[in-house]
Length: 125
Image 1: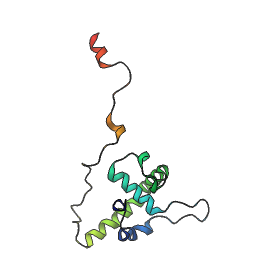
Image 2: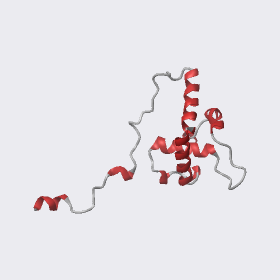
Image 3: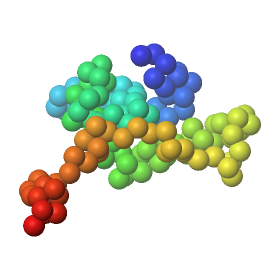
Image 4: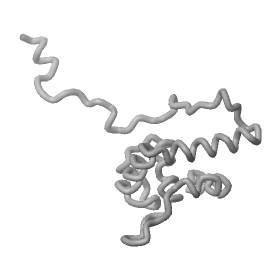
């Protein structure tokens, strides 16, 4: 799954955005693995529960995603990565966007209908 991971150059640009580990308590998961897990879920559209074990427990990755999204950490990381690509001319600063047309819906989003009286019985009355 090397192709699904951040490159070393990209990680070096954003590594200091993420908070250092606490001095006490359990040893936390490497933030690079957590970021790779977040990007994997966002890239593939899979449910959090289907996240590969190599990224760590899905609950931990989801917790960090919520925390970092709400406190602006992910916005800062995205800003740094975009700025680096703008500097070298790979993307245009005014025209970049995230395309969501190819994000696959989760299996649970299929909408299996509501429980209760089937429609066929309603039409018979």
